[in-house]
Length: 154
Image 1 (tube, rainbow, N blue to C red):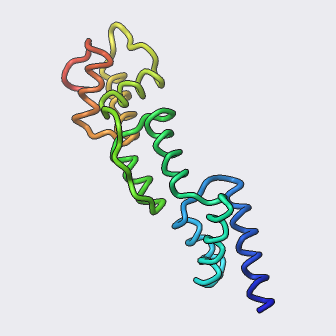
Image 2: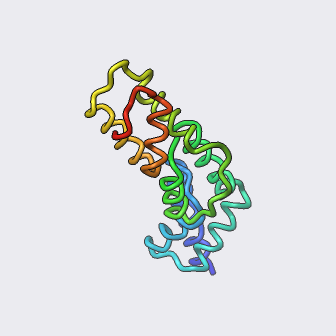
């Protein structure tokens, strides 16, 4: 019994070290504890304690990720879905227009568009949007909205 409580205390201490670095989902934390050799019951008990004490909250992490990917680093649906799936979180319904997020991402990264954009610049902007998880058609529409001087081919 003593050994089990020591292992549980170690699992909690290790979890707190990880959570001090960055927020983790319950899924991520369970995977990390399992990789460190903690049993399912130790992992479950550690997670239960961390939740009860307010150190672990999937709801708080979900809200933080939504803020990050809609406000701080505007991203497309594909990237957001990937990130939530990777972390084992349920993706809530996203508010706002995805094309507007793409335009905002362009404005934040590149500022005001140049008067005479080159095809190379347009391709760079297009790749940027694709890397942020925006679908190609949406990225093209956002580019035209951000810079009406662009032709149809980025």
